[in-house]
Image 1 (cartoon, rainbow, N blue to C red):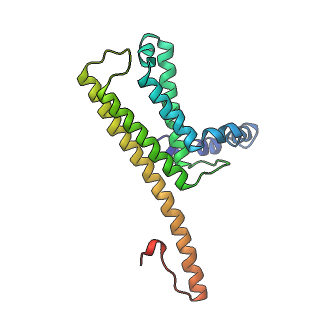
Image 2: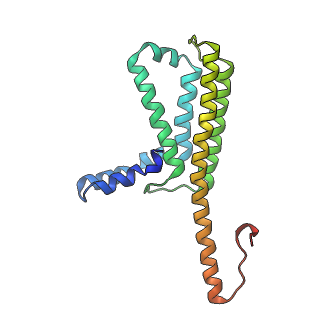
Image 3: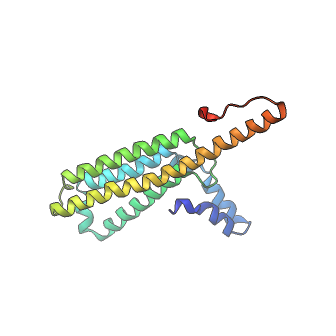
Length: 190
């Protein structure tokens, strides 16, 4: 939901023209940020972090160390936001990735997330002593909650795809009217 709020656009509109605004835009267009918002990179950071958290003793260590617990939570939220930001691409970025790249990344990330949730349903994270009912409830919440988030992101992609094909079709209709040529709608619709 934060990515749908277009935080970069909001910040650019809130800042007055000047050094701060130019600096923020320079950071947004920098090569490291372009690399971070490449959808597969964002997916690896997000899902890789979750797999590392739940399939290594990191979760047990985070329960004993408050600073590590806070760092893990910050990473999970930031990486999830980065994935949503890179898949939606609603803000002004220098490099915009195609809909097939973003859709394939979302599909792969959703699959990795679902597999992780299913493995957690069967086997607890190493070094933890969760009760089986609690573990299964948490795994189900992760599985179905992830599906809801992925459905929301897929809806954003579908709306973007529809907008692109709709504009292309509208241009073809205008051109056909000018040239009096018949037009075939996209994907054979009539």
